[in-house]
Amino acid sequence: MLIQPINLPISVSRRSLLKLGGLATIWGAMPGCDLGGMFAVPSRDTVYFTPNDKFYTVNFSDSPYNFSREIDIEQWRLHVKGEVKKSSVLNWRDILNRTSFDQAATLMCIDTLPGGSSLGNAMWRGISLKVLLREVGVDGETARDVIFRAADGYHDSIPFSRAMEDDVMLAYLMNGEKLPQMHGFPLRLVVPGLYGIKNVKWISEIEVYNGDYQGYWQRKGWTDDGTIKVFSRIDSPGHYQVIHGLEQRLRGLAFGGPRTIREVQLSFDQEKTWVSAAIEPPLSPYTWVIWNYDWVAPSPGKHMVAVRAIDIDGKVQTSEITRPQPAGASGLHTIVLDVKAV
Image: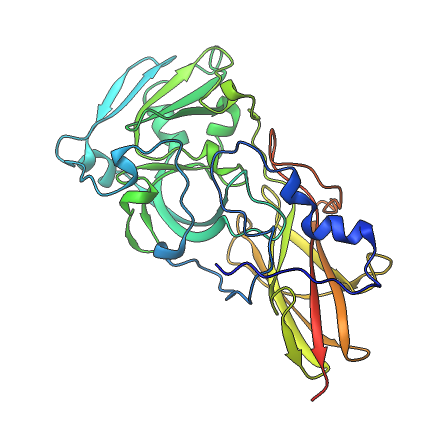
């Protein structure tokens, strides 16, 4: 990606400058997502479903599973054990023969900065984790966490109460195709509303656990909760792009993590006032929404635009800048547009 200099007009305040570029100074050791929110970027395409080959990928190590190694599906097994009455071992055909369901859900990396690109939306097909756990006789009195261990050595957990909700799935199809190798073939966890560190790929073992399990990143100081924060982004026009004509359509994404988005707002006066954008209805409460706003610039020249989202419960996206570690970044995506008269 070409990194463009940020030449701000004199009228832009230092506070706003920090919102545009200050996150560069707080980046540290992270699980490995891109830094697309830190720099000037061209316009991005805004589509509801992310093509599999465009969907972000992040892995904790350079394991062969991250690249081209082919898994022998006939030898693959899923082990289910722990606080259950009957430990089980399932093969690939056992998974495919179970009742499945489809669900649109957005996944997001915990490293994603305001305006970042490490999130994607897909239609997943898989089996219900809750149904599987019930069939092996899970002990609801002693179970506290459910642990997921991956073939590449990664491991994490979610609370037992969350595991027993209807939207948690073990997915094997992504956008109508076999789950790609880079995205966890043959089986991955999809937990709507939780950051990617909790959505374990290449699952080989599930353990119902009677304690508070600390996974790979939790042992390094990252959150065990993993709830995604309210996020929004301006996709087009891109930051510091020259645009011709006073009438422009602004377009972007907003995502509420565990809650769908109720409203998206834009500010053209450094957050003094806000106007509402139009939201395209999503196919699922677990996905991002696409928003549009038809803007008439008051004059040629440079204009700053900020975006924020409000979820269905009325929680307003915060403008406070925080670094990704330990629980995900916060702050508003802000861009500068250079408007030229036609």
